[in-house]
Amino acid sequence: MSESRPFSAAEREAVYRAIAERRDMRHFSGGEVPPVVLARLLQAAHQAPSVGLMQPWRFVRIAEPALREAIHGLVEAERVRTAEALGERADAFMALKVEGIRECAELLVAALADGRDAHVFGRRTLPEMDLASLSCAIQNLWLAARAEGLGMGWVSLFEPADLAALLGMPVGAKPVAILCLGPVTAFYPAPMLALEDWTQPRPLEDFLFTDRWGAQP
Image 1: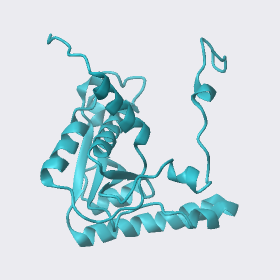
Image 2 (image 1 turned 60 degrees about the vertical axis):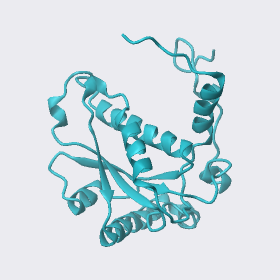
Image 3 (image 1 turned 180 degrees about the horizontal axis):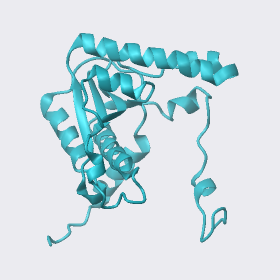
Image 4 (image 1 turned 90 degrees about the vertical axis):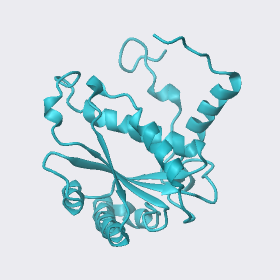
């Protein structure tokens, strides 16, 4: 085992700052992500923990403008269906900006690989741990992007089967996130949905129990 090297106070502060200032971005300013930076970000994602070291993540970089536009169409169709499902909040939802697919510098689709049923280690009673592992990879990418001064937004408004077909995914693979990545003019000072008064975050104390569910520490 290699000897652990402690983080300096400044390094620790940088980690916590990236966590605190990470935002789900919807407004992008075009530009580009240099290839060397994109490579660093994807390597950060690939260094995420995964149950049984199964590494279930796959990332599809969208380079064709027509394909980007087709993905935008899938998201727009689901945006309308979601608004219908929201009932009285439909108009407020439709007023929200929920994606930056056309404006972001890079568009990625994060997906679960096919053949995941072969991985039993850590998944026999919790098969959804493949999704948890992919989420860790996305979070790594998100935090690394924030540290690089780039915005990232996770878009989940799509029908997975339709997006899988559009990207030619094999049977068993499943798209989980459309990731908008690129330069932004500014980061939101708080979560955008809080700024838009859609909902408000709650404090940690509301989610922390001791020994038994619901028992406050």
